[in-house]
Each structure stands twice: as structure tokens, then as C-alpha cells.
Length: 113
Image 1 (tube, rainbow, N blue to C red):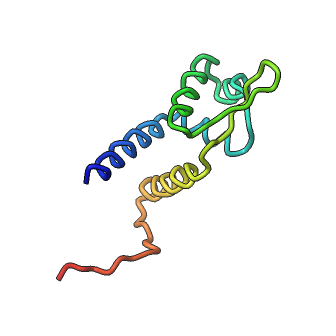
Image 2 (cartoon, rainbow, N blue to C red):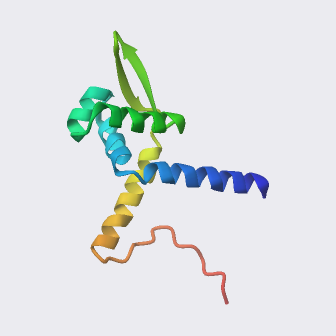
Image 3 (tube, rainbow, N blue to C red):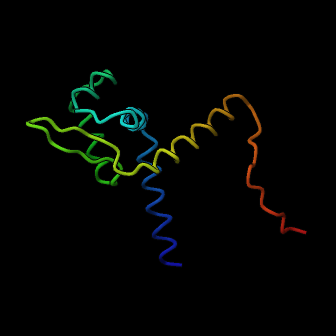
């Protein structure tokens, strides 16, 4: 049970990291291509220090990584399956916004009698 609690706590931290709209936008941009801090700042229309701060948080949770070319750091996704989490959550958000019931593609048997 202790490992399960540790896993739940770490999951909660990651979901909190993903709850920031700037970080989500960064991840969706990085899905397309590796980008520098300046490129991200320009696309997001926020300051370079603000982007750097968000990237550091994403690096801490092993969601993004970077490589250096000359004096410029280019960031990319380090964990591609994080996009599955984001896209599934966005799909659910779309259902909520449209007041639609979600289709359950993997129904579980009802064990309650």
C-alpha cells in the first residue's frame, strides 16, 4: 500500500504540473517541433523568463528535455506518452463543454448486484 500511496502522490504532482495553461501550451507546441526558449516566448506571447520558469518545472518532472546548439537551448518532449494524458483530458473537456455523455469504449462489467 505504501508504494501505491507514493505513486498516487507523484501522480497528483504531475497532474498539478499539467494544470498550468502555459505549460500545456508549451507541451502542445513541442509536440510539433523542438523549440528554443525565445521561439516559445514569441509563440506564446509571454516573456522569456516566464517560459524558462515553466520549462524548468517540466524538466524537473522529466516531461521535457533539451539539447544545446551553440549558445541556444532547444527543448523537446522527453516523455511522449504525456501527450496521451493531455489529449485524453482535452477530449473529456470537449465533452463537458458540449454537455455530451462520454462514450465508454471499454465498459467494465458491473460487479454490483
